Length: 455
Image 1 (tube, rainbow, N blue to C red):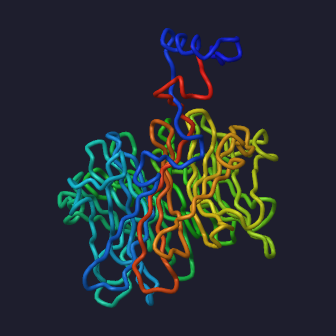
Image 2 (cartoon, one colour):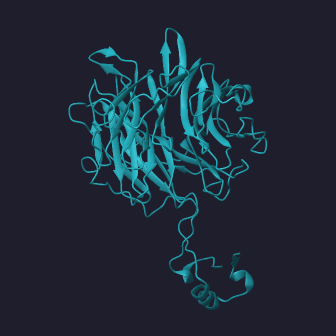
Image 3 (cartoon, rainbow, N blue to C red):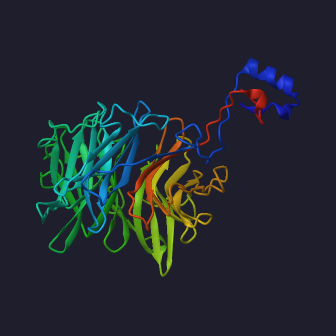
């Protein structure tokens, strides 16, 4: 039990003595503020330029926190004028935001070329520190190649040639965009294919060496598909080994599908293993998902109705039904046009976070943003400005910033990565990483604190 010392009538001197006797927690920045101990005032900027590829712009797409506290960011190069992905980028940071010089070249890995697989749409970390990346071939010798690609790198950022074919595994499909690991080390991925007018979501499983796992899927190929599927935003593994896919169908409908460990649909979930949902009967896209410890499923995305675009949080029970105790009958919607969510996170206290982008009225440009909800689906007023702080990237004539992923540290601090640039100059985009206080309290000098606590 905790109580404020001031509430029980102690003077500051007695309060100080009580703190010495009982012990104290410490106070840092308020929840929702930038963490001033990280980088420069909570922000870190990193440039990656590749000689010979003047119009390749580094776009971050995925981030994770390693068990040692290091922060790994990956993405792909976007070529201006061609509008397609080429090559791979990775950057690793120390816990304080400085570059980890033991990784790649001074903390950076850049693999670029027109015939190089573009991986970095998503990544997963193996227990041995090796890094799995998913993406696709775009162009090989001038010919479009429709293949999902998985590559593995060592913990130092070097291609692992023992995986697949010289470090690369090729899977049926066109676009690969989600990857995760099972407890047994097998690799699950999600993607999308479009063959002869029949779009489909692809879910596949690889063995630890990069070969297809032919025990998975209904045809023994290691692959299972869902027809009329347009995108797979997240593949997750439940504690019981069942596999959850969150994506969308081509008619702007959210899709949740749950598989048994062998790749067959789980008939105990939704209708025949599937749930389809149009939020408030509007066109709906899913952009991210997270599992709660109690088995409930959080999905974030956007709805489209006439000229209105709204970001939403939806929560589903473990059987696929809407959790009507969350938000308004299972849904929390932002006001039109404020926020574009792309990553869902669940804190240890049950609060729910979405990282993404919002318009910053002060600068007149797009900015990073975080929205935090209480566990029952209402805005958390204790976090930032009304539960929805905005973080402009004011650097070097920036006039746009795009946040691509978020992550939670074990101490509750929140990381957001993305990139920024200027539409009107020919400069390369710059990688951005910010860290925000999630609510941990610290107070190294108790007598200077505004609030005193005893245990």
